[in-house]
Image 1 (spheres, rainbow, N blue to C red):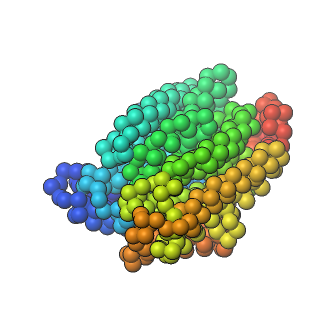
Image 2: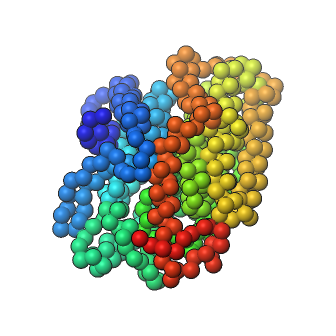
Image 3: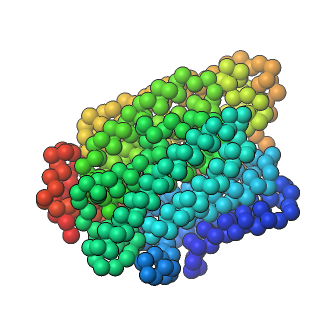
Length: 507
C-alpha cells in the first residue's frame, strides 16, 4: 500500500465532487464518474483492510504540522477501532451509484463530498481536524434532504439542522475547553488524541464538557431521547441519503465516542456509564415498539435502525472487551443489513410508487431473487445465527451481562421486539396475495443482482466465519479497555457501576 493512502481516500471524492459541481456535465456522466471514484475508494479500502496487521497501534499514519502555534496537525491513522467503520464506508458507497439513476449531477456530487468527509472524520487523530471533517460531512446531507427529499422535506431538514447545529456548537465549546486544559497542565498546545488522553480532568467544568461532547454524538447516533429528528429525516430523505445516514453516519457518532470521549473523559464516562447504558436499552425498546405501529415500510426501518443503534451504543457504554468488540463488529453487520434494506425499499418505492405496507403483497412470487436478498438482509438485521447480525449482538449482550445483569437481560429480551415487527412486515409485503401494483413488479436485473450479491455474501460470510474481522479489531479493543480501566483510586467508580470490573490504578 502506497504512502498517504488515507489522504487519497479523503480528498479524491471531495475534489471529484467539487469538479462535478463546476463542470457542465449531465447526470449520466456524473453518475458514471461518481461510480468510478467510489470504486477506486472501494479497492483502496479492501487493500487497506487486507494489509492491516491488527495490532493495537495506529497504522497508515500521516502527520504534518498545520497550525504550529496552536498545536493543530493534519494527523491521520487507523487502528482496529476505526478500521471497520472505514471499511464500511468504502464498501457500500458504489452501490448507490449503480442502483439509483434518477438524480441530478448535484446529488451525485454531494454524495462524493459526503464520502470523503466521512473518511476524514474516521481517520482523523487530531480533534480539530475531526471537527472540521465532521462539519463538512453534514453540509451535503442538508442539501440532499432539502433539495431532493419527499413532500415534507423542508420541516425534516429544519429539524435535523437545528439538532445538528446545536450539537456541533456544544462540541466546539467542549473542544476549546479540552485544548485550554491541556495548555494549562502541560504548557503547550495540542489536540492530538494520544496527547489529550494524558489530561487529568475533574470538577464541574469537566463534567459539563463531557456532557457537551456526549450530547453532540448522542444526537448523531441517535440516542434516546435525542432521536426525534430521525424518523422524519430518514423518511423524507431520498433513499440513498437515508442509506448514508443509517449505514455510515450514525456509526461515526458511535466511533467518535470511543475515539475521543472515552480516552479524555474516562472518569466522567465511568460515572455515567450506567445511565448511558440505560439510555441505549430504553432507546432499543421505545424505537422497537414505535416500529411496530408503522404502516410506511421506510419509516418502520427508520425506527428499526434507531433501535439497533441503541444496542451498538450499549456495547460502547459497557466498556469491556466483549461488548466493545461486538459493537465494532456490529457496525459492519448493521450497515450491510439495514443499509441494504433501505436500498431495497427505495427500489420498491421507485417501481411501485408506494411505501405503504398495506398496498404491497405477494412480491416473493413475482421477484424471487429480490425476496431472497431482502429476506437474508432482514434475518441478519434481527440477529439470526449464521448471519453477521448474530455475532455482534451476541458479543454485546455477553458484555452487557458482564457489565450489569439487569441491563444485559433487558437488551437480550428487547431484541425479540425487532424479530416481531420485521417478520410481520416481511410476511405482509412478500407473502400476502398479489394485487394490481405488485403483479407488475419486476425482479432484480442482472446488474442489480451482481451489485447486491457481494454484500449479501458478506453478511453470510461474517456470520459463518467472523474471525478475520474479530482478530483485526480485538487487540485495539483490549488496549482501549485496558487504558480506560486504569483510573486513580480517588475516584470510587465501582460504587456507581458495580459490575463494570474497573481497576483503580492509572499509568
